[in-house]
Image (cartoon, rainbow, N blue to C red; front, side, top):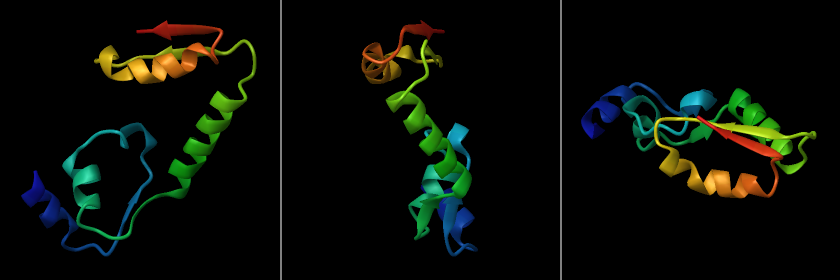
Length: 93
């Protein structure tokens, strides 16, 4: 809701998202306010999560088992395809 996003961002100078678990969701409180606040950046905890994930996927400890879940598996096909070359097993739930 663009109007609600504007209202939420009216009293702020910048936006820092440190919630890795919800960063992919296009909600008013995350993606919406980021459109109206500059700078809109990832926080230190988010960067730590991304760095860990990057290292875990690029140089995984073996055996490497990936667990992929969520309500729409169809949206995860690109992720699954990229894991096929790296993971020893992929569990899809």
